Image (cartoon, rainbow, N blue to C red; front, side, top):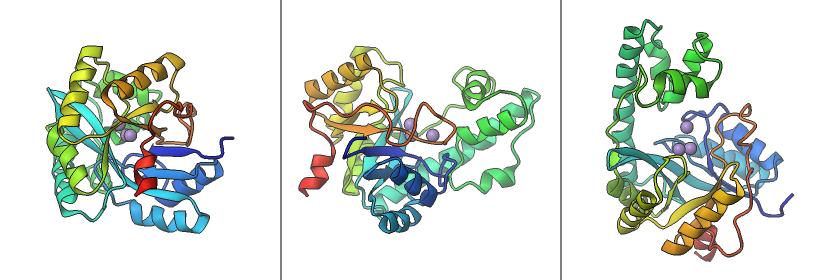
Length: 278
Ligand code: MN
Ligand code: MN
Ligand code: MN
């Protein structure tokens, strides 16, 4: 086990993870993670509980968030690290995205009905701190319409599928700025997940940096050697700080364990030097 293990991208049940913030922190600690960022989708609600648990077990907790943004008609995820979670500028932006999520949840339910599927009970959706598509995916799995979350997305929830709904997130520049104004470091999350061409990735990074973005996840969970080389190349080309995170949601997702994935290569400037120096 590595002596220092950073996992800077994780979810609790404050968004679409299955573990409570305290259980997440304990699991990360048991897996040898020394520094953990809780980065729930569009919310910082899990941070106080995570902080209390982190203090108990002596893990270093970084206050984080994962903000959904729109860039050229595409949804991109930006992780904010070492944010001041009580920042008004950030909170206002997150509330706008949560409103989008609530509207989207209504529309997804309508589309499920049109497709002859059972909608999610509105009380259950409202019981979530942040309604996400993963909640709908779990609902579809529970109803026997898919054998797992991935299949629920592929069959119903993904772009072009019967229950797909376009969402108008904060624009990229605004999302990044709200993180920066909250004292945080903005990081492009899982850059390979968007299936962009190299040219488009570069164009995304340029717009991201123009807005004040500083980092990129060179390691996102299970990362293959060629993918790692690719991301190291992009971080070097643009002078981006390198981040590392599992994007953990659920203990059953054995391919994305807490603290999992390769180490950040030595040639990179890791994002944590930023707050270690502070
Ligand atoms: Mn998620
Ligand atoms: Mn994401
Ligand atoms: Mn995530």
